[in-house]
Image 1: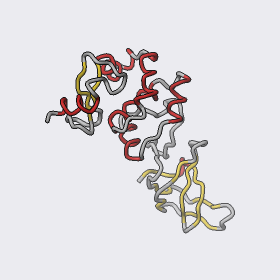
Image 2: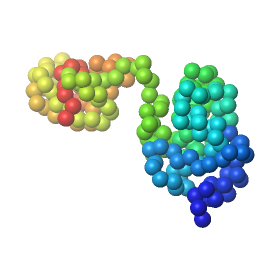
Image 3: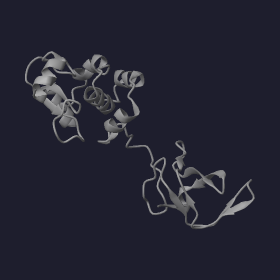
Image 4: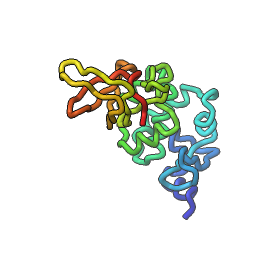
Length: 191
């Protein structure tokens, strides 16, 4: 059975996002590159145009996500999450996002195209300007006196699986010599 036929059966020949019945086609959810039943959804021309071009988004059209975000199909949930994030300025979309739940692997796919990131939020950067993320490993570029622990963290010490301090982009947390410490990002480089 073809992907199109499978999606038509799954959706009862209607757009899986807005429910439209006309101009339907298979939409493969990026970053997937080939059509597959798990990575695709059946969508109308209006939804596809607005998913592909943020300049054409009509916020009222996407109020349909109130229903489709609860789909049991990963591709539908991922695109609902992405579109709600693109409409984050609308009060109703933020309310829906607050209610929506994605499994960890679904959320990773949903964020793969950059949706959900706040462009105004400062990023944690190391001494060379490389962006730091939770779980990264860094190396100290300077000897650091650790207050309260009575030791010096030596230059060249590797700090694995760092945590970001979310309210301060100049601080990260990690373990050095078994001690959990806060480190200034300007004294580390990503390894």
